Length: 278
Image 1 (cartoon, rainbow, N blue to C red):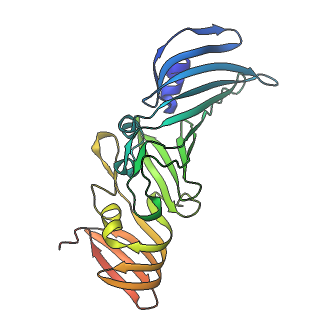
Image 2: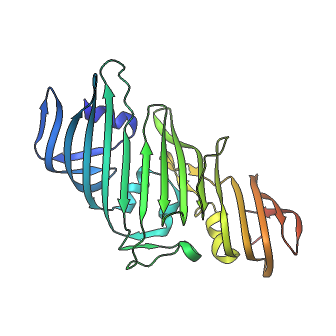
Image 3: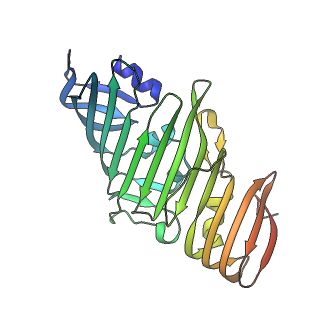
């Protein structure tokens, strides 16, 4: 029953190997092997009794990343730019109430990413031998699951709302923010935003604009494309020219982007095609 509940809520717990104890007080287990969200690990389970009629089942696990398996479950553009494996630690809590029947699991994952190459430009990049903390926090419900990501303590943050459509999980609202705290957009969209000291268009354009690079793949290989941009740059290289104190806001339109640019050197509206070879 617990496994069926987890799958319905979007928590993927599979290939459980070991002794799991069931009692009137709940579940317990030690050193059980399993896969959580496609990531192999060793799992401990305990049930906490809470006041009134409430309880809390706690799953604690540690293991090694499988980025490909995780990308198949959480369809986000970031996985196109990660390579390697790293140790992780996770804690999944499933609070419940016998009277209300309300179940809202919470998942926390931490990793130092040592062993993973991060291929984003500038300050976001990381070699395999360098440690940089990654924190992932997810709140699950039958209506929606909200994922929060913090890479390098505000170097890059993200918030992603996944909703269920026809029995499948789909991205509804999301923001990735460079250099600060991500906030969910008011309307369904996928926004890239943030503040950068230096912006090099040759490095960032393939990530932001290219359909293959700037989009995740949802179930059924439907692309999840970036729809809005909201950036500020101290200095930026755009179209082989240098600009300073730049504010860029853009929205995806059929065939490209409609962008408003404000800088010391240029103020205006620019139409940008998806294919910069045009």
